[in-house]
Image (cartoon, rainbow, N blue to C red; front, side, top):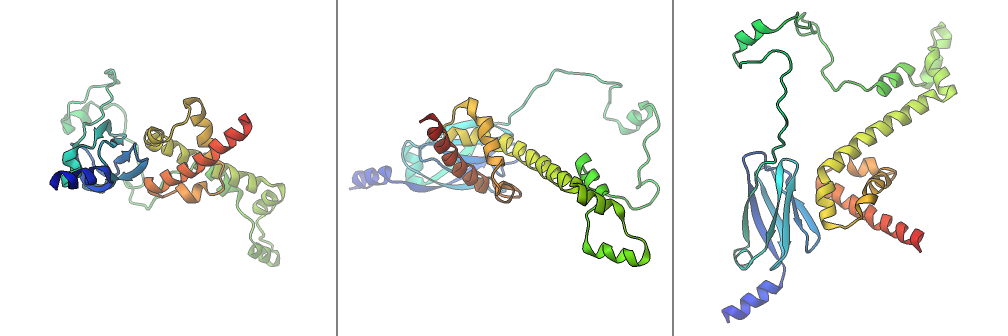
Length: 256
């Protein structure tokens, strides 16, 4: 009876509760069931839940870790628990010495530094901007200004701003807005490619020569920013999956 019950359990999918252990951050590690083509991520302490059955292949992947594959065995199915230890991904670079060698002794290192330290707004006790530095396109857009109907009130006082009106008429403001949006989308796409590319294509096959084109296809979607900016990896993964179905369908039509 026990053997019969085990055989039934082994042939069915069960929810496995797991935990990833590592010397570095264990949050947001991609846990992929390559066999079932499902995906999840770990929480702040490395815990995750994923559905699997006997002999399914689980892949654990992140930028900070060496990818690891695990085959679901009988014991995992029985206890429905899994602990995975990941090794840190270390990229070794050739040693390069630039300028003076720092010893780690703050007082000694300060004395060895040549030149005067730069002065910032903290040194002189005045308020300053602490946010993300604006890009060149963002600065140009800010300088161009944007026309608003209330500016027409300036006609009464003779103080109407000309730049926003002229830039609006010439189309320069619209052009700069499009450029800022494109640069923001390019930056977002670059982060997605670095963070999710390996995990995504480990589940869904696509010829390597077409992957760059596929990502630009995703970026051109009018909902790209709404579906991906500030979203979790799982939500972005689902968006990429939907776009891949459409992309492959378009390829098939072209080939036919």
